[in-house]
Each structure stands twice: as structure tokens, then as C-alpha cells.
Amino acid sequence: MASRLQAAIDAQAQRVPQKTAFYNSRGESITYSELKRQSDALAHWIAKNDSITPKTPLVVYGHKSPLMLVCFMACVKSGHAYVPVDVVYPRDRVASIIGQLGPTVVLDTIGTIPQLLEDALERPCFDVTELQAELADELCAAQDATLEGVGENDLFYILFTSGSTGTPKGVQITTECVDNFSKWLMDSEFAVDEERIWFNRSPFTFDVSLTDMAAGLTRGDTLFALEDEADKSLALAFEALGTSDATEWVSTPSFVDQCLADESFDAQLMPNLKRMLLAGEVLRPETVRLAQKRFPGLRVFNGYGPTESTDLVTLCEITPEMLSADRALPIGYAKPDSQLLVLDPVSLEPLPDGEHGELFVVGNTVATGYWQRDDLTQAAFGCCPQQLAGQSRSYRTGDEVTREPDGLYYYHGRYDLQIKLHGYRIELGDIESALCALPEVHMACVLPSMRDGAISHLVALLVLADPNEKAGFALTKRLKAALRTTIPSYMVPRAFKYVDAFPLNPSGKADRKALAALITD
Ligand code: AMP
Image (tube, rainbow, N blue to C red; front, side):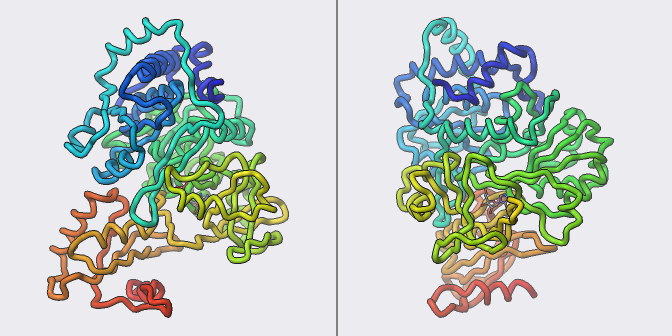
């Protein structure tokens, strides 16, 4: 049986064939009938290709183009999970992901991956932009053939996120997870019976991007995204947004804050904007207030969820009462088919409403683990007491939360070194590993620098391998350039500080609290 999400998107090719399913600021667009036709053709081509091992996950490389969607759909139609890899990833990260996947192939939607990986790429790579003619023949030949798509318990996609030891880890999401998520959104308070155009801001490597695919494409709505320069320059982004007619907005709060900092971001620029779903990091009341001032009547929703529990597991509309209460905004009510447990992080005993504890997610919304990382899978997915989780899958989030008697959950921070910077999920250990791999560095500690209760940037504290090395601007510039070849630019710390030695805590580890004091002056 096909995935419900994929079947619902395909059904739009019958219902609204000429309607635009997706378009971007570069002017590329695709209708529902073309999305179906091209993904069917590519799926048949994949199924027939001898160099592609059946059922292996396939890498889809690119950014926010219609071809990415075609590839995602073609993968699941031909029984393969898709693994989005964004153009912002440097060569080493791309190589690490491809290496971990083993017998995968790469579907390249922009034609740059062979140059990017040069001779390091040992897997076949297909430039999908050049396949068009071949695919037209494929479709004619395959008119009557049926394909076996991904099944309910098969993987639908794998998203690689920052790993604490310097190697990205692949979160395995099944078809069932995606279908349940999509069903929830379609039934939720975010669903409305109107023509909608969604601003699909997040890269496909970030699970928030699934929100509008699951809620919008399945209903025959239109998705709009930023590509290239418009993705990097706010002025160009505003130009594109101004002509987008978008009615729905899905992004991180950081991106909205960035937009709100410019006074021209208002209802004059986007007169049709009605709803904003913000997710992925702390939503501040000031953001909501300012957004509602600039866009009178705007409804704002807060969504929370780790990649490991399929995008969002809580959601609520921010009401005037929530805004006027003297506390942080809630992250929402639980997704009905999942159980959210607040446990003592040490004893793993359930805690009563109102008490701070660690959030565990239980149910079919939880991923099946990390790709070929049993150690990490066991640590995060295997530790919820069985009397609480029963036979269901569970995930330990690392998030400190409270649940209130009215069913609303509140987020209070992390129990570990995972952070969100400008919406990106980052393990500080990931950056520290990359720093320690540089010959100039003996020890590294990366700390967030806070402003107005939010992380403004990262600071790297370093002990150099050669005490005689001249620490200064030239060295920092060289180290930053070296880092950019192994980790994405958004992970490279903005400030570098050099110290002779690290203060140590009683267990002999770098004393992060003492080091934090060094950067607050
Ligand atoms: P990701 O896997 O990139 O979606 O990141 C998941 C993590 O982001 C969660 O475990 C939280 O730490 C944080 N997060 C996600 N949504 C929210 C939210 N609405 N408020 C506060 N933190 C959030």
C-alpha cells in the first residue's frame, strides 16, 4: 500500500492538475500533474537501474527546487527512503553521510555534486537535471507497470542531524510516522478549509519543512520557497515574499525575528498572511506581539518536537491570555496519538503536573533509531522504563519541560549540550570535535554567548597545541577557514578566545561554568 501522504499528493494531480504545487524565488515551479508525472517516471527509472540496490536509502542533493520534491516522491514510490542533503553542507559532511549510508546512490538536483566531492565520491551519482529526456521514454515504457513503494513500516526518510562526537547521525522516520503526522495536522486547529499558499522556509534537511508538505501538499495547496540569493539576503527575500501571496508562514522564530527587525516587514508587504506556525526553538512573547502588531489579525501557533519524533509533537495557538500571563509561552498540547511523559531525569520516575522533568515521547510518532548507530539508538530510544512505554517506541528528548493540569506543556531548556542557534540544531561537541581535529588545537570548548535570553553567537575557547604559536586575528581566520571545510558555516563560532589552560572540574573535565565566566566580561 502506498504511503497515505504520497497518495494524497498524487490525488491532487487528478483534482487540481494545473495548480502549482511548489514554486521558488528563482521562478522554478511545478504543477501537481507534473509532480506526479515526473516522480512516476523517475521512480520507474530508479526501479530499473541496476546500480541501485532495492530498498536502500537514496541521497537527494540540492536546496529548495521543485526537482527535490520530484526526487523525494520518486524515492518513496520506488521503495526507497530519501535522505535530503543540503547544498550548505561542506564536502566532508556530505562524504560522511554518503559513507554512512553504504550502497546508496546520489540524485543530484543541481549538477554540482561530482565537483564537490571530486574523487572522494565512490557511489554513483545521477544528475537528475539531465535525465529529463530519458525519463520521458521511461514513462511511456512503464505505463502499465506497477511499483512497490515504501510500506507502512519501511523508512520514508532519514534526516542527518548534528552528532555530539563530530559525526552526523541519521534519524530514521517510517512511513507510518509521516502518515500519522500528516493526519494529525489535517485534523488539527491549524487546518482550515481555504485556498492556501505556504511559505516553506526551512531547508528540507530540517524536519520543520515537512510541516507544510504534510499539511499543504496533501490538500492541493501551493508551497513557496526561497532559493539562492533570496535565501541569503533579506532585501531579496522581502521582494520574493512581497509577490508570493503567501497566506501561511512556517519557520523558526529566529527567522521571523530577523524579518521583524526590518520595519518594512508588515501587512503591506504580505497582505494575505493569516497564520504563522513557528517551531524548532523558543518562541518569545515579544516576537508574537510584534508580529501581530505588524500583521493585524495574524494567528500565531507554537510547535515543538525533535526530529526523532517526526517534526512536531505539541502544538497550540498563542492566545491573548497566554501573551499576558507572566511566564514563558507554552509549546502546546500533545499530539493525540503520542504519549508525552515527564520523568525525573535520574530516577526516571513519572513526575506530577507542574514539576520540572525530562520529556520522553512514546508511540508511533517516534523514529526507529539512528541509522546504523546501535550505541546512540540504545541511549536515546531504549531507556524509557518498560512499565511506562509498554511495547511502544520511546525517545528521550533531553528537554526540560513541565506539563500543566490543562494539558499544556512548557519548555525550560536542555539537560545536555545541544543548542539551537538561529534555528539550527547543533551539538556543541560536534564543533569541539572539528576544532580538536585541527593540528593547531590542543583543547577546545564551545560556549553560547547570550543576549536578551537568547543565544546570539558561539564562542570557541582554545588551548593551542604549540604554546609559542601567535594567537590572533590571522590564526582565527585560518582556523575558521579550516572549520568551514568540515562543518557547515552556521556551526563555525563567531568569536575565538585563546587561553593557556582550561580550568578543570572535580571529574577532570573542562569546567564549562568557569570557562563561561571568561566570556561574559
Ligand atoms: P530539531 O530536531 O532540529 O527539530 O530540534 C529539536 C529540539 O529543538 C528540541 O529537542 C528542543 O530542544 C528544541 N525545540 C523545538 N521546538 C521548540 C519550541 N517550540 N520551543 C523550544 N524549543 C524547541
